[in-house]
Image (cartoon, rainbow over all chains, first blue to last red; front, side, top):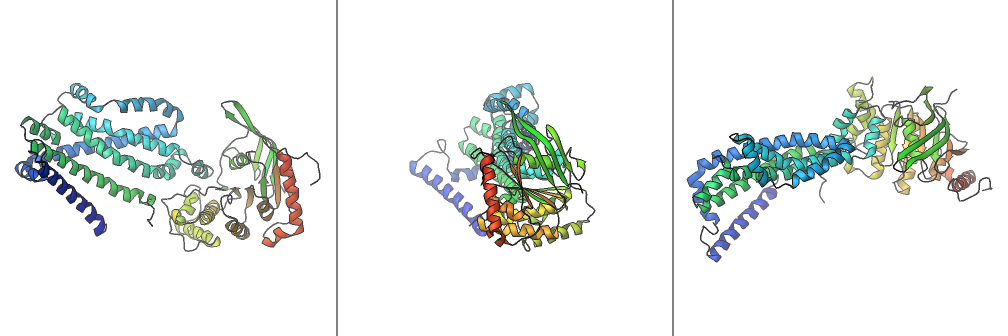
Length: 253
Length: 264
C-alpha cells in the first residue's frame, strides 16, 4: 500500500465529516433532528465501554453468520453449478427466498428460537448473506469454458481433480466479488435482529436504547460505529482477495 | 505396420431437442505412426467431434476408433490436445501451466526433471525467459505456443490440434507453422490437425483429408508427397498451387456448390 492509497480515502472521510458538520450548522438543526460529528465525540466518550462490548457482540455474530453463509453458499453454488437439473430446480426457490424482506422473517425466527439470542442473530446474518455467494459460485462453475474441462478430461482426470485444479480457483474472483456484497448484507442481518427483537446485545440494542431514551447523538454514534465495522470487515475481504485471487487483477496502464 | 490412429466406419449423432443430429456418418481415417494428417471441411461438419472421438472424450454411436492397436473406450494419457482458445490457468505461471498434465498423468519423472522438461519445451518454441510470467502478460501467439508445450509435456503419442492457429494474425501463424515443424523434429508425435486454412494444411501435413458436409464422411484424401519439415517457400511452388486448387474444389463439392467429379 502506498501513502497515496491511504491518504486519499482518509482525506475523503475528513471532507465528508466537514460537510456534514457544516450542513447541520448552516441549517441550524438541533441534535434531535440531525446530530453533527461534533455531537458524536461526547457520546463515544460517555459510552465507550458499551461500544466496545456491544460492537464485539455485533462483530462476532456477523462474522460467524458470514462464515456459515460462505460454507453453505459455496456448497449450494457447487450443486447448482455442476447440475443443470438442480439449477433449474433451485433457482426459483432461491430467488423467492431472497425476495422475502428479512425484516419480516426476524420476528418469526425470534419466536421460533425464543431465548436463543446468539443463534437467532447468527441465523439472520446467514440467511441474508448466502444468496450472492451461491449465485456467483454457480455462475462461475457453469460458465467454465469447455476447453478447460476437455484438457484435463482428455488426460483421464476425475471430476474432483477438475474441480480442485481448475473450477475452484477459476471461480475465486467471482466468489470474492460476492463476498464483498455479503459482508455488508450480513451486518444488516445482524442489526435487524438486534433492533427489531432487542435482547440487550449488540450495537442494534444500543441503537434501540438510544431511541428509547431520546439520546439522538447516541443513535448517530451507533450508525457511524456500524459503518466503521463494515469498512474494517470489507477490507479484510479485500486483503484475502489479494492473497487468493490477486492474479485476476490486471496491471493498470 | 499398423496405423497408429485407425478410425473405421464411425457414425455419431448429437441428441438435440429436435431429435438426433447426425454429425459423422461413415468416417474413415488412418494415420501411420509419426504421420501428420490435416482434416479440412466445411464449417460445422463435425471436425471437432472427430477430435473428441480420438481423445476418448466421446464414444461413437457406431464404428471403432483404434489407437496403437487398442480400441479407445475412455480418455487416455497418451493424447495431448491444443485448441483454438489456448485456455491457460491464469493463476499459474507459464511454467506451472505447462507442467499441468504431469500432475494428472502418471510419470516417472521427478519434480526437478518435470520442471526441466517444461523449460526445455518452452525454449524449443521460443518462450525462454517467460517461464515465470502470468498468462495475461503474454500475447495470443505466445499463449498458443505455451499451450502447445502443455500438450506435449507428457510426451503423448498423439497430438490433436483443433484449429490452434485460427485466431492468430497471418504472420504469427506462419511463425507458428515453422515452430510446429521444429518441434516435431525434436519431439516426434503423430499429429491430427483440424483447420480451415488450406495453405496451413498442405504446409504442415503429409496427408490432407477433406470431410463432406454434415453428416461428415471422408470425401477425399490428398497426399502432399512430403513429410517432415519444409521451407515456407514450398507454399509458392506450382505443385502447391495445384494441390490448393484440388482441395479448394473438393471443399466446394463438400459445401454442395460444385458437382462431384467435375475437373478442378
